[in-house]
Image (tube, rainbow over all chains, first blue to last red; front, side, top):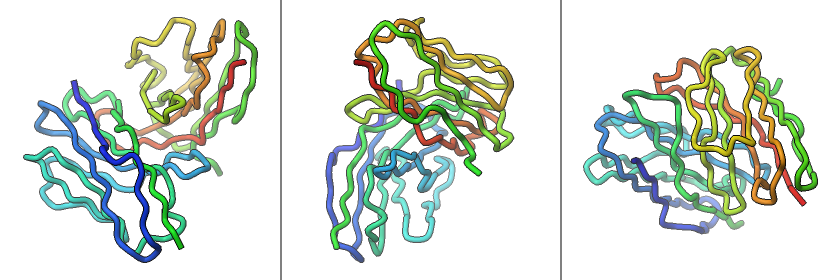
Length: 116
Length: 114
C-alpha cells in the first residue's frame, strides 16, 4: 500500500521570501503521479502542481516548483517570492499509474502562514 | 461558472437523520469522486464513478450510498447519521480515469451531526 508523509505540520515564512515544504512517499510502483494541492481557509482544494514520475525534469508553475527525487521518494514544493495569498494548508498526494482508478492518496498536510 | 458544484455547502442535522449531498460538474468529465476530510483535515477517498459505474468503494459503511444518474452528477446519501460522520465532503471529477489527469474538487459540503 502507498503512503504519503508530510513531516511539517506547520510552517511560516516572511512575505517575498522562499519556503520549501517536504513530502515523502512509499510505493513499490515504478510509474505514478504526484501532486501538490492548496487548501486556503475557504476550504476549496486547488491544484498547485503535478509531476509524472517518468519525467526527470522537475515541474514548475510560475512561483511554484518541485524537487522530485525518485530514488529517495521525495517530492518537495518550493514557493518563491511568497505572497500573503499563499497562506493555506498544502497537501501532497500520490496517484498510481498502472490500474489507475483516479484514487489520490493524501499526506497529512502542512499549514503555511505567510507573514507580512 | 463553477466547474464542480455541491449543495448544500453547510448542513447541520441531528443523529439518526438521513441526508443527501448533491454534486454536478460542467467540465464534461467522465469520472466523479467523493472524498471525506475529517476533523484533523485528513482527506480520504470514499467512492469513484466512471461513466455512472462504481469503480472505487473504500470500505465505507453501507449507510453511505452514492448514486450517479448520469456522468455529470454524483449524489451522496447518508442514512442514520452518526456523530462521527461530521466532516467536510468533497465532490471531485476528472477526465479519462487512468490517465493521471488532474482531479478537480468542488468547494466541499460541511456536515455537522449533533
